Image (cartoon, rainbow, N blue to C red):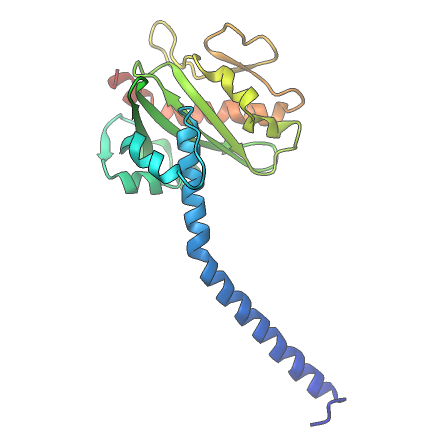
Length: 235
């Protein structure tokens, strides 16, 4: 074959593209189980972080199995629909929150127990910030209304602005906040600017990250309200 012809060039390029695609596909398949495992470990670290338990990729699974003593799925009426720990872990909030109404959602709850701290309920949450999804975990005291700890994550929020929700300095003040008032009415937490200290039902917006902060406020309202009946019945 004439190596200078257009036909040769076309065939050579086509074969090269097919070979490269095959190699990339094979590599992706080989890496997929490892990537899935990394996501699983990262999720377990986030769950533990909501109850102020520090972990590493090396010990996250051990600590998770030690302290997360139960995991259930409930519905918006407060009824338990599953006590399968693995099924609870596998619930995808992206699907539940975006494609289902509240009555149809699977609502996961993880139960933490550690000597000296007692039992805490951990609720996963997911919403939308300015540039993409935001998510987190809220741990609750046994009274079902007081926040014990909180952790938030983001994908694409602006560093130094909206992305500040992922820092401990923003998350720590959520401890002690309450999502029900004294009469038992669900309040969630309301967004304010610099005046939330000492107020049980408010949190301060991120400076310069108003849109992300409003997204977080909406995320708390939408997700936590789904658990209202369960939290009231679990006291």
